[in-house]
Image 1 (cartoon, rainbow, N blue to C red):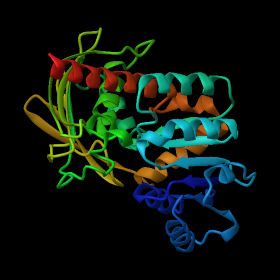
Image 2: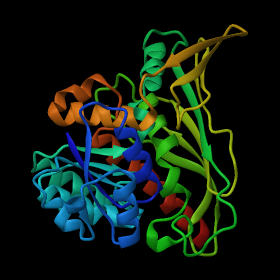
Image 3: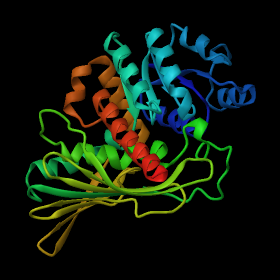
Length: 335
């Protein structure tokens, strides 16, 4: 399948390099508002100059491109997704796919009236590691799930008020940047084998906010209808453990590298004072796995039922929880 990229930042380079791992995937065209980035990117990845576009809309008009990867800043995703849908392109959009729930619901409605395939780029959900975790749980190796602890945090250095992480207008903050990771993991595990994914109640929030108004650290509890409780931690100013622990009645699973799994990974199963280390291998890298599954789903949407990649419903529900977090932080600050 032929791909086009909108936005030529760091993630676009990862995406373009990952395409090289796949035999039948081609990077055909790219678009950027920056002429310098466009020329450099085109030269680096040997793209035909006629497929280098300064105008996003012209890229979308190309009949040579099947799929679009959106790698622009958070606040631009909503409008770009709508344009991709109108152009009848399949869409892989970096997280978060929108910056508020009303936008997410509008995208959901627009996609329901189209034949486009859409996937939010939460790549860990397309890696074989998550499939092994679910297999362990479904086999009953740790018994009935009781609780989840999940964290993702990094030290981004001295805050840049105009940079994407600390700028409210650009969709910055810990919740929008990385909140989708522990929230989507919690939603997945807590709703396993449920007929319908439920949205948890949010409580016990502790947070820090930067002077620009963006959240920089958030601890919270997610309580699900079936009694499962997840404790999540996120930060863009501090390095955290960046692990996920799933506790059951008979033991626990410790995912040592949940968010950026590599070609070789270790999952620990803790049971009866013993630790069993399970090695998980993947022929493809993290983003190549995502692209590979995307193309399979784009060709046959029913295949998505056979894996744990994000569905559109998953993405909307995840954003719903993230917006609950943001609302409660605002309410706590105003009280």
